Image 1 (cartoon, one colour):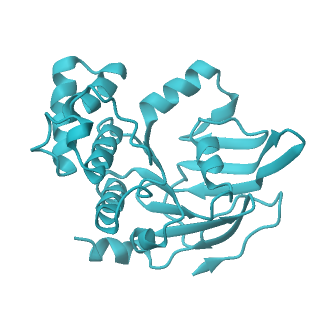
Image 2 (cartoon, rainbow, N blue to C red):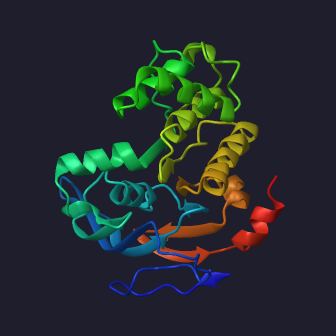
Length: 259
């Protein structure tokens, strides 16, 4: 099903099948313009939406449509020019910079297409160091890191460094690093663009699992149509605006069908 979209300045966009409980994230009338020389590009134009826990929401659009800018604005990475983001009940962009950074550390997990792994660290250390930075004691961090890597199918690869891992394995390390903190919000920006079809399906399946089994709010930005079959909800962007909001299959039916 496809929801009709509001005109700019209208109330936040929500899919027609709303989950029980309040949204984890809402955005209202977000604007963001980038200026390069004499050129102005409106990356976000009065964008409003609401995103819910326990489902995988896919943000789909061509390169330059504004989808990565929207992800950055609602996750505390990029301040919008105008508009309000409410994340887990907090007015995100009214917080001091230190509190926004703490919000990202405590509540968010991030997965990017470039993996962003440390070349000198093993898979286990990649995950452990993030947990320790978040304040988890070393021994507990090591246990949680090993458990997260086991969950993404890398239990036998703990001591390998990035140069010894395939592209798909590197992305799974990045996912383990993101989910080890048990984040309430999980953001993925083009997580499969550097992967072949098989590894891409594995990665998106893990993101769906984070929503289904851990109750996380998962937003995945992509231009890869191969991934759409995993999403409970698909939001499409063009030219800085949301143009469609679809639920191809009711979430309850999808969960029953999932392995």
